[in-house]
Length: 161
Image (cartoon, rainbow, N blue to C red; front, side, top):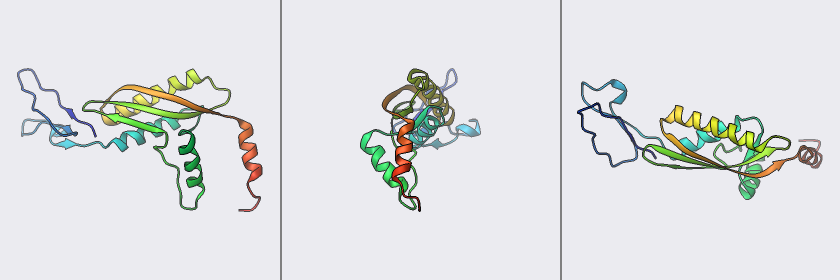
C-alpha cells in the first residue's frame, strides 16, 4: 500500500502519518479533494503497470519461465482469463514506487527502444493514476518471441475445437 500526505502551506504543520494510505487534510477550510484518506493497494499499481506494458508495440507477453507456462495453460482453460499482473512486481512506499517487469519481446524489434517505451508508458500511467512517484522500472527480457513459434503451435493444435 502507499501513503502520501498533502503538502502543508507555509506556516502550517505537517500531521504525522502511520498507515499506508493517502492522507488528506481535514476541516472546513480544506479543499474537498483533500478531506479524507485514499488507500491504493499494491495490486492496483501492478495492474496499471501490467496494462501499460502490454500497450507498447514490440511486447509479446509478460512473465518468466514457469509463470508464463502456467499462465498459458490457465488462459486456455474454459473460463480462464489472462492475468494482467503476470510478470509484474511492485514495491510501494509512502510516496514512491518501484516496478519490476519480466517481458518477452517480438523478434526484430530493438530491445533498447522497446524497454525505453515501456519505462515511459509505465511511469506516465502509474504517476498519472496514483500520484506516486515511480523511482525505477527494472525490465528483464526473458525471451524473444519468434514468428515460427506461432506456426508450430498452430500446427500442433487440432483442427476442430
